[in-house]
Image 1: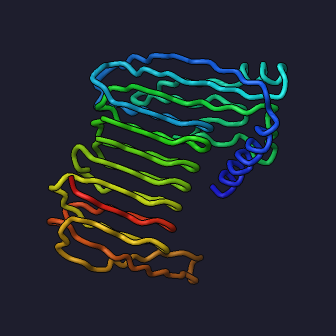
Image 2: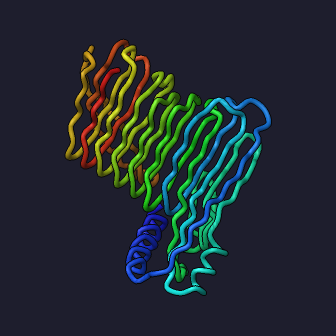
Length: 289
């Protein structure tokens, strides 16, 4: 993971430097449609991007409608033509998973996300690119979305039982959604509003940014919170407060080391579920509708 992150940061930095000198630009709109076979409730849409935003809206239809804004920048026509040829999208259907991902040099889709084919031998293309995804999906599908550079993630009006969003250099906004939630942001804020509270334990993480969440008034959960430079705020009534202790075991046989960590926990309602919040430089704000 460390090697992957280093490579991503390098790619983003090199791209930012070369963009200053680039002059020529090419824009294209890519449109695709995927028909589902079977019940949307049992199927998962996976969207993974490298450079650019992802915008998903749930609707009453039966097909996945995809519109992608493709932008290429280059210093000359030859490099621009190479970018036109190399940059695109791929659509994979594997059982109950529909995968849509950026098709870019030196990157491949593996285990749910884009990863470098060979970070140590990466060569910066002679162009920069952005792919901005706009997707309409059957609202009851499960959803997994992720992007890395130069874009935010926005999801609205979904009713699936599971929702996962990851963004390295941008924010995450989930509006009027449902389902068990896993959110992970590095350099961006997280904002979520639920049409119905999650019915399974969920996790929320932002390294450098606030987490703002609005739950329905009938929330019943234990809220664990960890932060180095942030605070937890809520307008829900707190039924109980306590510290939860966890133990991590590491080391070789006969040389085991234990690390004990205590997290403050507040109980809202009967505490039926356990939701975990963590930031480094950001507050957690939990509000009721």
